[in-house]
Image (cartoon, rainbow, N blue to C red; front, top):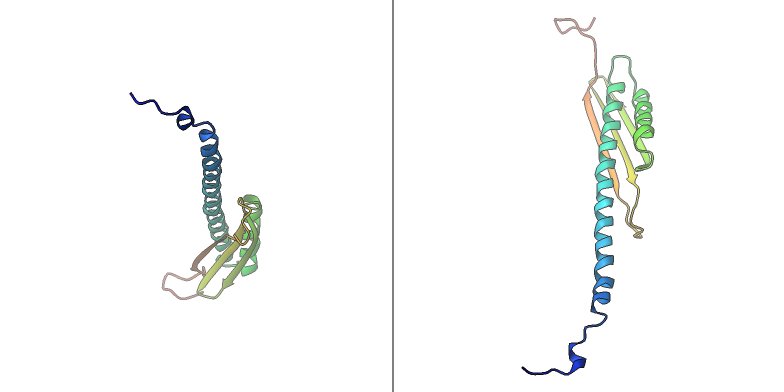
Length: 137
């Protein structure tokens, strides 16, 4: 058996060096997972608000303002911290009603320039009362 000099066999500090390299990388990956989970959640919040607003705006006596008010109520109840600076636009015509909800997702990573957005749209026919023959009363 060949005896190596004692200086070549010592690995003192190797675990600390590996820890210093690996732990920040793992923390960054974990924060990225959390950030994109928040984006996914914010999109669902925006979709829910858009659907609720569409349901309010497309009724026979509903207006685009009713839809916007309903979307604001839904956003306040669900996503005031996740979906920041939300904007709601509602359009209502005689045939179609469309609602769009957009906002900025809260940031977990303090990366300059990282601005993530979430948006959703809901659209459907405007309700109108008709007779069985298809004529309006």
